Image 1 (cartoon, helix red, strand yellow):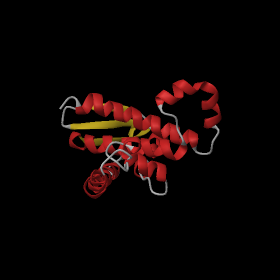
Image 2 (spheres, rainbow, N blue to C red):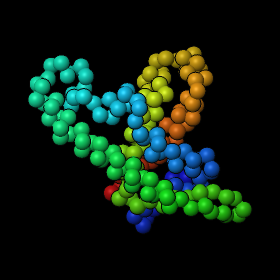
Image 3 (cartoon, rainbow, N blue to C red):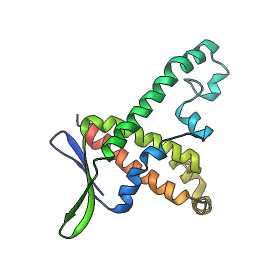
Image 4 (spheres, rainbow, N blue to C red):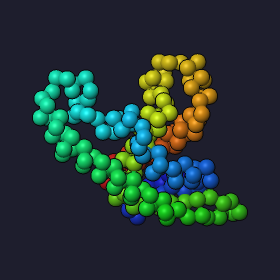
Length: 179
């Protein structure tokens, strides 16, 4: 996959193989925390300061958070995933020099939505499949990682997370910072 910041107000995912295309098409599914309480709590914390601070907070602040902030977070996440899903509907099959690949051109104005959806998908995947964070991975060493990779679906979730992370890094460093 080649990621390109175009000069015409768009960015592109080009030269995608079939596996990369399938991983992109899974973003909406991967970003859905339904049925996973850990993922729900990660995306929609019970408190603005996190669980350890919850015990020390004013109950009114927590109630305000639940009433005003959380619904807006849910709306923003849904909107981001909807924008990404709509963009993915514009994937094109292409052939160049007898090489088949997929391509997608996305308006730069959608980059924030993509960042949100990709980040959400990564958080949900990490909670759903128990994927290590980078800090955890370094601290745990290779033995623990080898055992974790044998779990059902773990390798696919890890691949998705890595692809999403690469696109997210590109968007932050090459698209959003260049505005």
